[in-house]
Length: 225
Image (cartoon, rainbow, N blue to C red; front, side):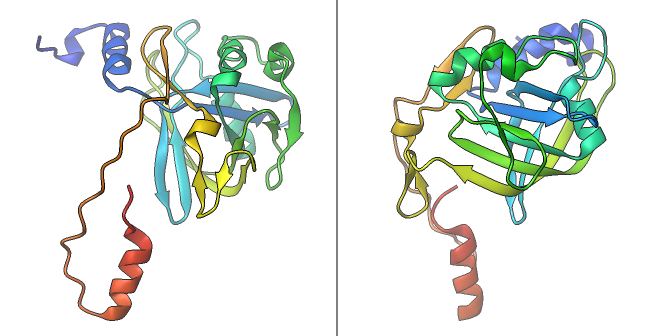
């Protein structure tokens, strides 16, 4: 099968993309509008950008229902701050409840029976039940398209990280078995992180000319990716 995207309806291309790009982490983004009204919504077009400064990106799409931007995007444009709450298997059903397209007057925290807890560095509520929170200030918004099926990249600088003691381990590692994250697939499907395997990354083949540079490279690159 060979497909030219411009010759297919955007919804069909969307289905192929979310079927191929799997599994996807879920950014459960909390935000407020300029009056302080809260919003909570999940986005699976989400990933890390870099660690210096710590930066993430998620991509809210334009709604098909009314061709309007999602409330999350509107809020972040107004306030410049947001929090990424991370989703565990125990929180999956509550996260799904917050995925509904609803008027801005709806408080998704209340609808899903979640506890609002104030952020440490940004004036946004976070999901108290989530074990990880990345509090973010807006770096920039890059709009690709305002048409239905289009969307934007919301790039955020992480200014505060909270990790529950129950999943944090010595050596600055997270216990995946205790964390129990889930990933997004296509349609109504999700995946658990239960079948793990390891591979050691090959050592760098970049030639370092001084001991100072070598130490710096080891600090930055390490052995993981």
